[in-house]
Image 1 (tube, rainbow, N blue to C red):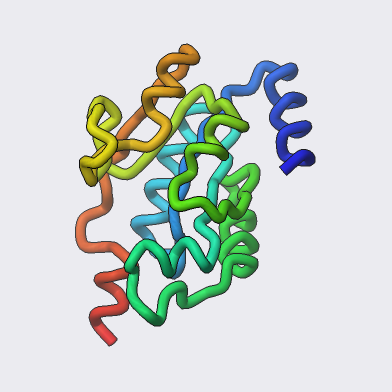
Image 2: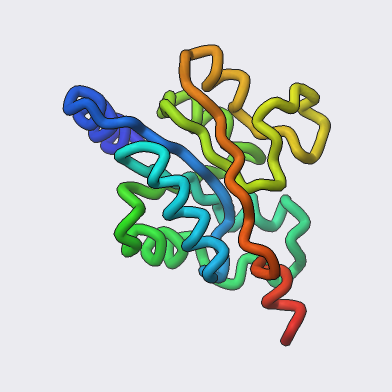
Length: 156
């Protein structure tokens, strides 16, 4: 984490705009790639918080999830041209990571509402209040219809 925070500081000093998003990214598909490209276009550096294997299991994604271990998911995402850094987080939400990174832009998929204020609501975008309070913005990116890891796995 310390290395990433040093890199973020250097990016900021160079005038870069930091975008943060998070997710499981278990089986990378066109929906993920499209979403990440759109998130990256919101700034100049894209950082992805990746749920640890333990946190994926706690999200009720199913007993066989994640399919790919966290180290493999990091490796695949970091190979994408639009991704500048990826880091694993173990908490139930990425809030602590968001507070540490202090992104200029927080991006999530279209099923999250950046204006929702009820933290118990499933559409609440974790970290949106904090990013906005620090002068940043929270953006909801439309999903690519028909593509989700859950849908892909259900076809097996």
